[in-house]
Structure formats: C-alpha cells, structure tokens
Image (cartoon, rainbow, N blue to C red):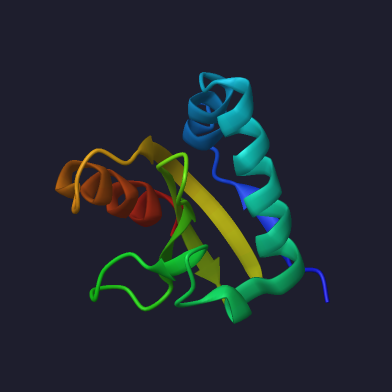
Length: 113
C-alpha cells in the first residue's frame, strides 16, 4: 500500500521542508528522497526503527523521519483523517535533543491544523 505524502505549505506559499531540502548537498537530498519514498511505501510500519520514530511524548502523530548516517531530521505529522504524512520542517542533527527545531515543528503543525 502506498501512503500519500504532502509537503506542508505555509499561507505565504513557501514550503519549509522543500526549501531546506533544496539547500542540502546532493548526497543528503538523495537520502531524504529515498527515506520519503520508504515512508510512502511502508508508513507507520517504520515506527520505532532508525528511519521513523516519535518526535516527542506530546503528540502521538508527530514523528521524525531520520537520516541516521547523514544526520538529518524531518518532522512528519500523520494526518489520520486523510491517511497522509505531512512533512513539516527539516534540520541537521547537531545534538541529542534540539528543542528549537521541535518547537518549530509544533508551530508548523498547529499552523497546518
């Protein structure tokens, strides 16, 4: 089963994930595209793997899609009402927990909702 994957777009027409991805090096872009495809193919089966995990204990449907070797993260919301993964924002992994990036993901999630 293929899941739908959408890139969150703000009211001003800009997509934080697309802009961030396009700024990355070619190998990181390729890794991101491969993981997004894997998410579309497998969905929540990837949960609690190195590819997809819950981003915080606060929102059950907010996850992070991960590039383990290349150290990137994308905040992903699973909109159960339309069975769609919504890619909210991305960042480079710098340390264990990056509160600023998680807060940004929550802001975009509330904007989406």
